[in-house]
Length: 340
Image (cartoon, rainbow, N blue to C red; front, side):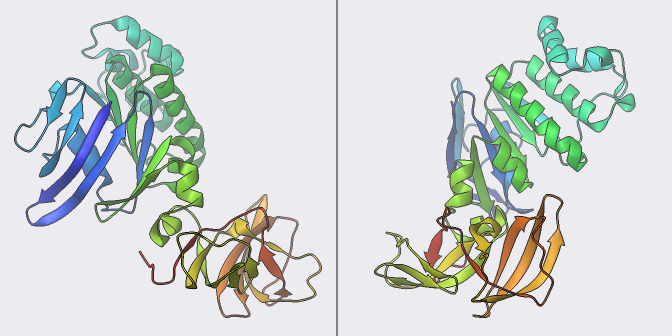
């Protein structure tokens, strides 16, 4: 089990990582996500031993690195997969994967499992981006690392390839039964692939939980905004629920006392009322997405929300509509003063 305890990293007087702790179990995939410059790659580099920590420790079964006792990268038995593939251009696929591998049968195994058998004698310059990333992963797994670290491995690939390759990588990691820390800026990638997701802002871990919890029960408005489309409505807590511009939510959160709150509204949390006999909003825009349409709506309260509906639902800008909360959803609620 990899353990990161109270990890902090400073570059001079600038704090990059602040007091971060987490554990990584035997075959878990942890996704680290956040805006550019939030410190997620620094965490990866610190775990790898490429960046020394200013405080805290990073430990595995047979080593423990501290500010006083730095364990060099070659002593940690970690594998890294980079966004630029980092392959030797003058070597074939097979030679890249077998480079400094003691047991070539492991290389053969991963070449086969990752669909690279017919590319064994091809050099990287003649491979697609997805094939190059499979080679990089095969090379890493052939060395039997204790932990795999992936630094935005799909960022250089087109959208269609990302969708399929993310699952190939996840399946390979699970098959190898090796834990992984995967850094990404892609929210959908983080939510779909990870066993847990860590959301970072300014070097501080805002939330670390399952993808479902991070999305449906975010710890603060920042997490809510970063992991999906988010609007917020004013709400007034009452004995029987929360009153809002979309009516009363029959849910009184235990953590929020009487008074004003913010209600998180995602596009799937609201729907059009078929009768529409009591309009409470006006369509601002309609965006066709293929299977769905995304509508921007200004409520009569002056607040704005988004609503996603089937592509067959058609409204034009300026149309008056009636919308309500989806009874199947229970939106998250935050204190009114919460803005982070």
